[in-house]
Image 1: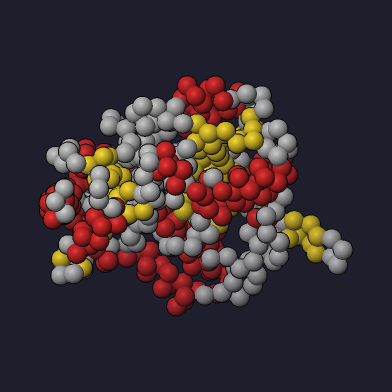
Image 2 (image 1 turned 45 degrees about the vertical axis):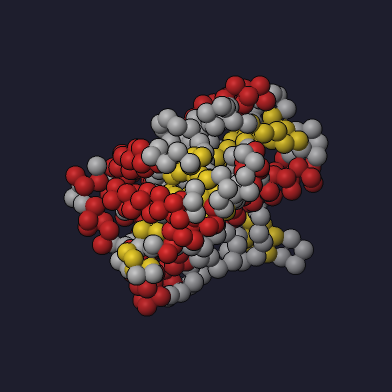
Length: 412
């Protein structure tokens, strides 16, 4: 448990200034972590320090500020290399977020490598960011998209996946942990089977990398994407991991400064990885602060975070079972993430969220960027409570108690 490490839970909560406030006169209970995580003070201080002491453009100056900024920017990249066990800093591309990272692969690799009749395998649980880019690519190339459905337990349908795989499969792009179902997909086996038919694999790790150890060499995926703001880092920064050999053969997505080696009036040559895909002035402060977030998570220990969140998840689902009116989506058994999306018949999810906000409790309501999944369930949206390592069992109890009161208020 986190409480047994040198970073006790009580100490950890003091690292997050935003948690120490009241909403509508009630202590904040923040349960919207699947949408974005809160930021520890060390991350906030890192941003301020950069702008107060080191603000300069990277890679473009010989003066001291530029040297310090470049060093901090590239050191943050090295921290990401270690965090996911990549082989080289050339395999880590800074992006604005996971959405941009997926689009980079879709436009740089997909538009150039896919042709009519080639097949892409996605799943019905994918975030829109892992659906829309591939729909665009398919419309432009003639590639065909096929979707893995769900089992009766609302998990990734492994048997259907095996049936969809064929020599025509060129790409499999799958979420690691669903942001609505909470199910943990077997990415290592998904990759292994895809590679057997010659397909490449992209993993959306937005909901896994903040919560558990990730080893890209063990997963053996060709690409992996993540967003910094879900892992205690700032908004506006994420990254794409890609195997170096694959990235070397991909064309740049954006053109401009920084991504070039030489520019002529009639031609240009690309720079080396990773800068080949990082055109223009990057999000320097955000990248450096993401490095601070990685340090913070690593100090606590990703195994410690995962183990503690498993306890939170068990407590959350035990308490949810006390409310028979709830329809909770996703598998009932472990492993599953510490999040629960649910609906109550006859009651709109936004009404639940609004009433809970009056009690200082922040949950999500809406389709969570998974409209096809919600259509499969015959629902326009759902309410969702999602936990992180700074949450407590007591906060879960407050949430459940106030949820019961909300349902009683609406006469459900």
